Length: 282
Image (cartoon, rainbow, N blue to C red; front, side):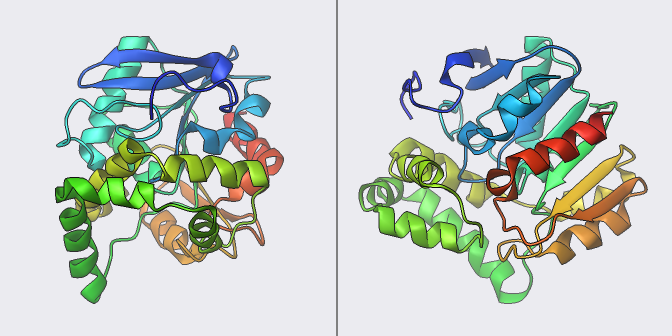
C-alpha cells in the first residue's frame, strides 16, 4: 500500500517508516513502560490491532509492525518472506530501533515468527502470547498442493493484480466468514482495502509460497520462554487442537480457551484479549 497511511487508517497518528535492511518498515509506536511487540497474521496488517493497541498503550510501550510486503511495509527482497527470514529481519529491526521486547504477541502466522525470534536469541522477559496460533504443518495432499499452488500464484506477476482488481465487498465478507469471527463494518472495510491493493496481495502470496513450519515444529521443545496460547473455540481456520498440541511440546507453555470466538478473536473481543495480554505482562 502506498505511503503514508491515510488519516482514517487505525492509529495513523503514530505511524512512521523505519529503514532497516532489507525492508522499509511501517511501524506504529505509542506508550511508555515495558515493551510489547505486536505481530499480525498473514493477509492482515497493523489495522488488526486497532482495538487492542490503544488499550495496551495506556500502561505499556506498544510497537506494532507490518510484516514485509504487507500493509505499508515495503519489501526489499522477495526472498525473505519465510518464518526464519522474517524473524531475523524483525530482530534486526528491533536492534536498529532500540527496542527490547518484554513480550511478543502474535496472531495466527505471527506466532511462529515470534517463537522463532526467541529461538534466535530474543529473550522477552514475559515470553510470547499467541492468538489462534498457526503452528500446524499441512498434511497429506494439502501438504503438497497448497505450497505448490502458492508458489505458482506468487510466480505469476499478474496474479496479485487480478486478485486485487476483482476484490469486492462480497468476496471479502466470504473470506472473513471462513474465520468464524464476526467483526464490525469498519474492520470489514479495512480488509477490503488491503485485499484490493496489489502490493499487499503480492506480499501475502510471497509469504504463503515461502512458508515452512517443519523446522520450527522440530524445535518447539527448545522454546524455553513462557508461552501462552489463546484459542477461540469456534475458530475454523486454525482449530484449538493445534495450540493444545503445540503447548504440550514446549516446557513452559499453556493453552487458554477464550470461549466462542473465531480466528480474529482479538478483533472480536479486544478488551478481553488486551486484559489477558496485560495479565501475562504482570
